[in-house]
Length: 201
Image (tube, rainbow, N blue to C red; front, side, top):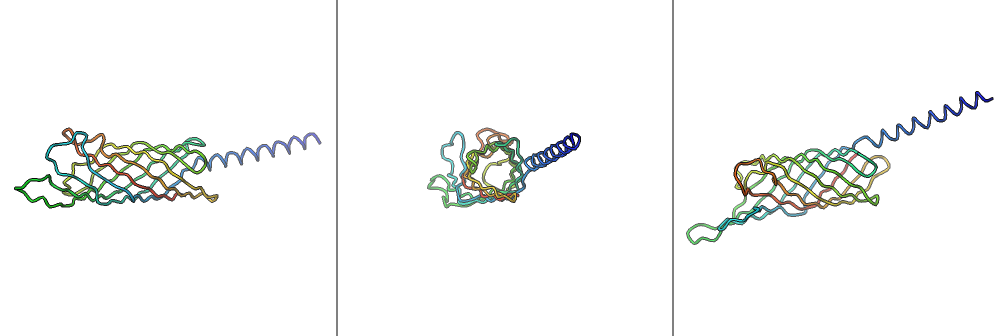
């Protein structure tokens, strides 16, 4: 009887251990998702303004991305992926009676790879922030190249479904090319603020 009880106890403990391992493996698995960003502004600025320079005002933009999120702990996650953004900037020359000061538009196309952390709190929220690498793929843009290192900060609300999917709404601010790879100082920077919508599974 004792041996049967010991064998039964060992089987139960082994079974519980396997279930715990499976549960931990499930938690460690990452999520792949898609994101869309817009509903905000994108403007061009310099750290130190130049006298007589044209004004640059963002007209519209959008960004599409693929994201990968992996748990580090029960409250902290790592996010990376790939994102493409397209920005339309309106350029208005400084007033000069001798030249045409009509506004014109230029386009910026940027591919970004983020490396960010998400800190989850109160079950339905997270704060995210980190760095990203930008590659400016614009053709004949009138704005300085945005190739370089940028940073992003945001706060989001999310909902995790029982079957493994999740959705989120993420207001954010991005500073592009804070560490520019272009030659020369006082490069133009792209400042972007908006809302990112995401779905992951």
